[in-house]
Image (tube, rainbow, N blue to C red; front, side):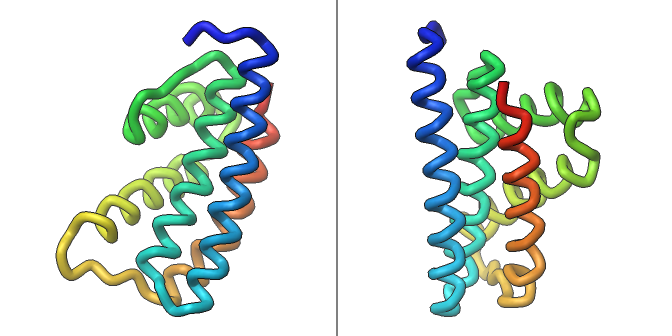
Length: 131
């Protein structure tokens, strides 16, 4: 992707905003007892933050699995994010895949209550990696 610095900055800012919106949606949706959809929005909150940070470093992913691979390669492997951070990214990717596409997968209220603060912390860590 060949972007000017201004274009790159605009996209990064926009995706960070989308991350915040998705996280807020997860909170609202969870309050309605829609746990699978809350898991989806938590994943997307991470996805938008991660893709923004990757773009800020000049890396572009064209798929969700590509984003996950690049985050591990550029930030977990280098030690900028911990292995636990990488594991949470992977867990949220898998949970979203399973709850959106697999039969008989139900995310529990307890799962969301456990994941929500962890995802919020990881989003902040990812945002601090912005170049």
